[in-house]
Image 1 (cartoon, rainbow, N blue to C red):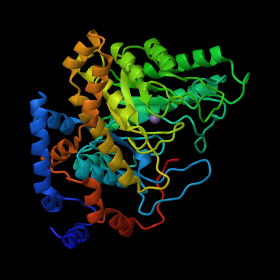
Image 2: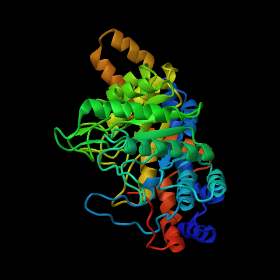
Image 3: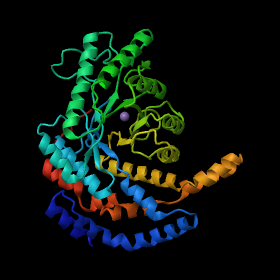
Image 4: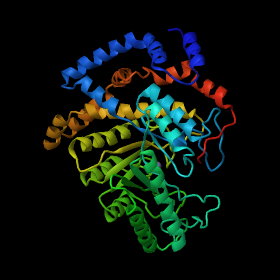
Length: 440
Ligand SMILES: [Mn+2]
């Protein structure tokens, strides 16, 4: 199909990407994909790996898009908006619908309250249903003061020395659960900005005890079939200490709350060079890994495109996740989510790249020969252990990702299709250049 015809379809159907348009757009690249897939499949077969089985796992792997990542993100220094941004929740769902149509991997959304309080619940549910989008974890917000709120979170929320502030923050989390219940969500993510920027500012033990007691109160309002995900972060916006600074603190709080409380790992929420794959492994052994926030970073919580800086680290993390999913039934079904922010890229292109990187790391981790690895570990064959990991990592698994998307009527090359179909141009012509997505 000629590009000009793609453009014609895009114009005709506006931003609704139909399967027919994608099939037409895929036609040109199909023959080359088939050759690459067959070649890879043959090689994997010799190594005892079943391509169709791996492709099936990739098809099932769905990642939630955070509602706050669909517009331009801000920094401490400024925010440059991106033309055609969604200006309300329904438009955000339309954007995720585009991502899902192209990648077939974005079948869920993670909402943020109060930024995404639905005005019309049935319209929101119907819109999500029409795009095949489920409601993943709900995110509460006690790191900002809302208009007309009685108490201020300037000096903390669930950990605050003031009972009135803590009660307001607890009630907000309970309200978020109620909103999530109406939409069909099954989990609540709690991330706190609570902490201190100067030594002596906060009494560590009181802050931790207050947080534990507040979390227990929220937990007691959690529906039977829900999870509570406790996210940790070592610094920022507070720069001396945070109340839930690391996985150990989160793990301890989750244990104190009960069996429906779990730790959430955000890749950007670690000090430089932390061995995140080992944290993942420990949490899965103990049955306390509940959720995951994907992003990438070079220095801190940079919230960059997944896989853009440390793809090998991502592969090693996925290696532990795959092992855990296969061997640790004590964990719940994990909540997979992206948590990123975009200052200079088209947010939708950035998310397409992130989804691709996640799938790629997952596919490579599925290629690890675990039996051979176990034997090499047993024999203390250090070099062979490394060879086994790198054999999987160096395999170009992109034909598997393409096949998974094709099987579900997605795009062979999502970024290329996004550009050929002129999705951003269409969004701008529908929404204009001045819209601003709610969020940071
Ligand atoms: Mn996060």
